[in-house]
Image (cartoon, rainbow, N blue to C red; front, side):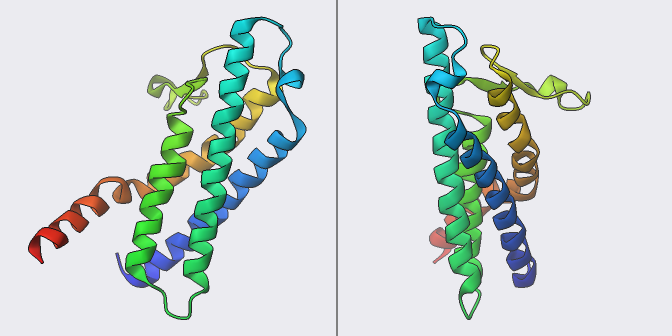
Length: 166
C-alpha cells in the first residue's frame, strides 16, 4: 500500500478508535455492577463481571492504539513500517478483543450478518444499556475488521519473508 494511503488509513482508524473509546468510557463511567444486576444470582453476577472486564480491556486497547497512531501521525516524517505495525496491533488488540471477548458474554453469529439483524448474540440477556453499548460500537469494529484484514495475516507474512530473506 502506498505511504499516503497508509497515512490516510491511520487517520481514519484513529477516528474510529476515538469514537469507540468515547462510547465505552461513557458507559463504564455511568454503570457499575450494582446498576446492571436486575437479578441477584451468582450466574448474573459472573456474567456482568466478565462483561465489564471485557469492556474495560477493549477501552484500554482502543485508547492505547489511538495514542500510538496519534504519535505516528504527529511525526514530521511518516514512518510507514511503524504505521503498518500499529495497524496490525489495532486489528490484533482491538478488533479481536471486540469480536472474541475473553469472558464470552457475547459473540458474533455470522448467520445473522447478512440478514439485517444484529449479528451479536449475548450469552445471557443483558439489561438494555449493556446491550446498547456493545451494539453501538459494533459497526465501528466491523469497519475496522474490514479495513484492517490485510494487517492480520499479510502483514505478518510479509515481515517473516523480509526476515528470512535478509
